[in-house]
Length: 191
Image (tube, rainbow, N blue to C red; front, side, top):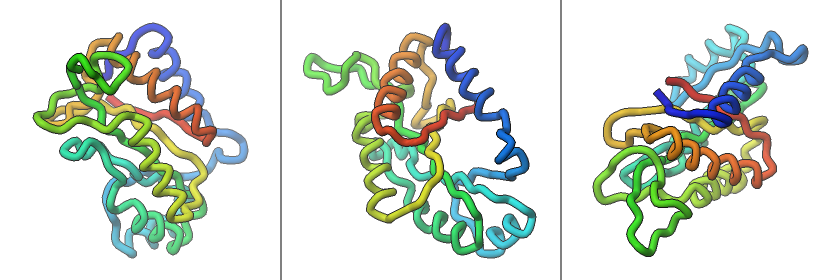
């Protein structure tokens, strides 16, 4: 479970509740998210079943390299558009694990991220965001919203499994750079 406390817990809960409340305009919009490429028959099926929005993973943990644009992002985006999905969003599932900083730490606080990994350091939040947004721009992708995925994992990457104060510090750093991008961002998560 993600360990948030105080104001961040209320923020995440509040954002989740706001995102879950349908607006009059979007009350009947059926949507789904995907993280793997799908067949053309899948895309035909979701359109014929009335799904109007796809939320596609655009950036992944890839903790072995410190985070990367999902190699299937553009293919999935093009497939959704070609099938007639009217609205496409992208989501970012960043690399976030522990780095105990030496004296010359490249981050603003001693714990960066939320898991353990031998040998590879996550790219800074700003670098990961820049890679994601540059890819979207370079490929002229028309995305309605971007989503930041806060999702605890286990295993090699072990995301978002720090103390409440360390999760809060990391989340505050991410929220700050997401806001600075001046794009339409939402936060979603599970766990």
